[in-house]
Length: 96
Image (tube, rainbow, N blue to C red; front, side, top):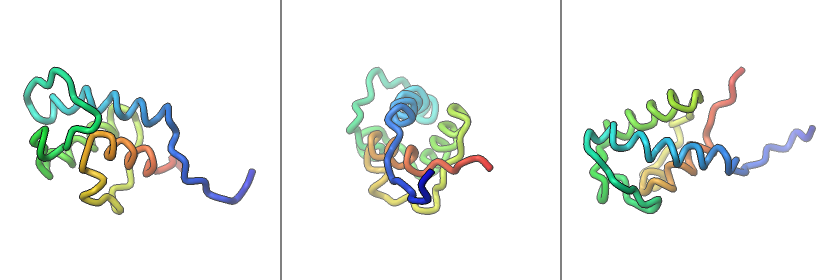
């Protein structure tokens, strides 16, 4: 096993995150969303708030039984559903 840390995103995990976001966004936003394009802007297109963002990440953590390091999250990471899925997949905190 190499000591080198590889910054690759697990595509299966990313797909699970995208699926969860699609299921959880309507609950967090408290309204029906028939179809959520992956490139939909979380704030402008879907109306997510900063409090809603926190709730959404907590819901994803619970649904997928993982922890996400949100210390490094930026506004750009919250720009779209896809960007958020990429961030979450790349910032899962490994269990001890």
